Amino acid sequence: MTVKMHLQSRMFLSNPYVVRIKHPESTQTDMKLGEFFKYLKIAKKQVKATWGYSNPIIEIIKSDYEQTLSLFGTNVTYNMPIEECHSYWVFTDEADALQFRLAAGESIHMHMWPSTIKFTIYEYDTN
Image 1 (tube, rainbow, N blue to C red):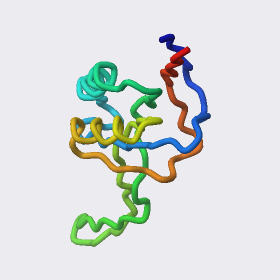
Image 2 (cartoon, rainbow, N blue to C red):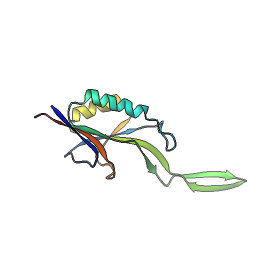
Image 3 (cartoon, rainbow, N blue to C red):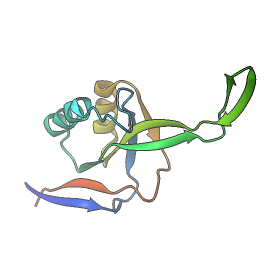
């Protein structure tokens, strides 16, 4: 079995199973990558078919979230975007993806994902 590694490539797998994992401890100013590397280690040990991942990124989840601040006796309303850190994981085998989701905990199966996401893909060739 040989492995081809595709660095920072667009999604080229047909009918992939994509999982989005939330990294709640990471913020734009302080990325906590320990959790991300834990998931990477789990995937390398458990996944037997072609799989990949994206680097963690900060995404704006809700941009019209209004916050009210009382400033010197005056109420000021402003929009405060809600940001979360996510990484995307892609699998060709649904069983591998489900097993990974169980190990990861808080994750979502994505049917669509941002087109700007670039993946590091481990392509396994059985020939």
